[in-house]
Length: 476
Image (tube, rainbow, N blue to C red):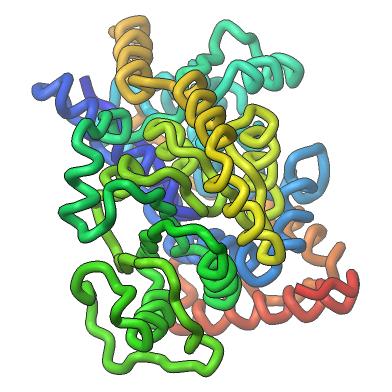
């Protein structure tokens, strides 16, 4: 069985989901073939930069603006049409990949990939069955497309949401978001592993996964929970955020007696930043980690995680039955995730101002922590990746003998000028709505080199920032 998984790098969750599936498929079908492809990068590197860099910038620097775009693209609007048209415009560029790999099933872990595959089926370029996986706990309209064979969602509530939008519930499967099965393993030697790390096995452990946080925000949370008059210990994983790692490393350099284990740096840091606000007294034993492939081990020995409500991190925490304190979700899918998790007693929401108070109550009166842990155990989707594999296999068997894919020579020898013109018209109309017209974005591979495009994209983003702040009066 050949399985093509199309993903994208707008946040790490889409790719981690794809990698989890690849691991399970490879284990269960050693004679088959599975391939993960970054679909946005494959169809056009400039479009990929536009989407990925635009997402990163707006989500981190202009979160209210990102939230506005998210909501507007979740209903019938110019923004929704632009998302659909822009992805449909590039869909035909997937044909060489599909024709060469000849998949029995295509799995998409990003909504834009679902749009592209739906377009190819609609235009008659292929009829390979497509399974779309939603990697959050709330539905977004971009996941809903014609010609999708099956949808995989995180919860039964999402089945109802999709049915309300006209999707036949018989093709919607609440199997959960696929994650690496190692997260479901129980650590039967938790105390021994805590001792091996240099921690006290009898103390509560708080895990902070902070790679996507702003440096100042997470330092304030860390300082706040250090002021709690309870004895517990902390693990901080900064991910590949060098600036954040450097800031924490600077703090612990002034408090070496509170550092657990040796200084672990697996990247080159030419100097350690020292800032006045970082020189506070650390009162909790702290282990600082830059990047690790063993996140599951740290989750399994912890009693509480402080993190952002990204779909995959949340799902991994659920699998480890780890209660969550969720901080600063990006308006849109992350705030929707927070609402679902809090409503189901899986998490609690915190802010910089009340982080210390909330964590104090959870650790001082652990009945709530126990209740949240039990809810996690009840609602996590054990074997999600294996169940999705079964769905992939069943879908491939149903389609066997009827799948066709046109060769690259057969697809649209001439540009589809109507669609091209419509795409640029829709893009222009949307930009004009926010006074962002004439920004000069061109997605053709032949006209721009990498440097020129980077300059153009930075100029567009800066103009977006200036105009949105002026038009809306937002402070972000």
